[in-house]
Length: 63
Image 1 (cartoon, rainbow, N blue to C red):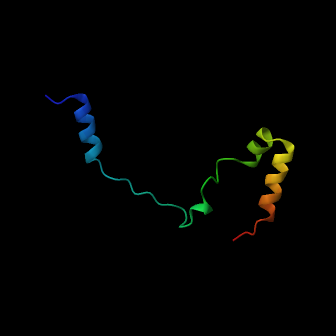
Image 2: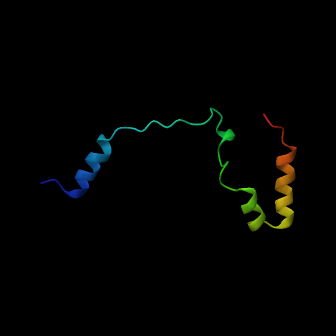
Image 3: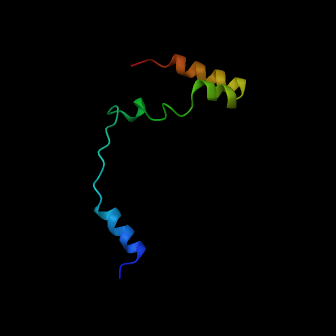
């Protein structure tokens, strides 16, 4: 008799892998891009921290 745990492990080990297509070969192009929006930064950061982040991003060269 197969236990539920053994049955679950068998299903996990035999499932097909899912192909994931990344948007770019450079992780830095997309990593965290939808995590900390400008609205959320404004809400949760101090004014000093918010403007520091804004000035950092505006000074970075765009590729």
